[in-house]
Length: 71
Image 1 (spheres, rainbow, N blue to C red):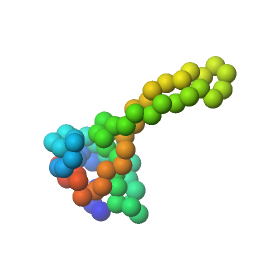
Image 2: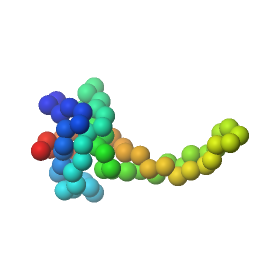
Image 3: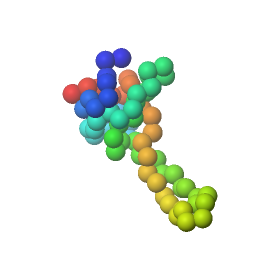
């Protein structure tokens, strides 16, 4: 895999086709990457301790490396 962290990539297939972003995490074993602000999913986090607040968080999900192209 020739893609490294902080490389700028463009998504070539899927719902986010045409969007660009930088790589923030790589899983070489499974051949997947996380791209900043691409393929966002919503996670609902419940407060577990006193003083914490419940929140709705948006985080990136893994994208297969075959669905992106290095710029």
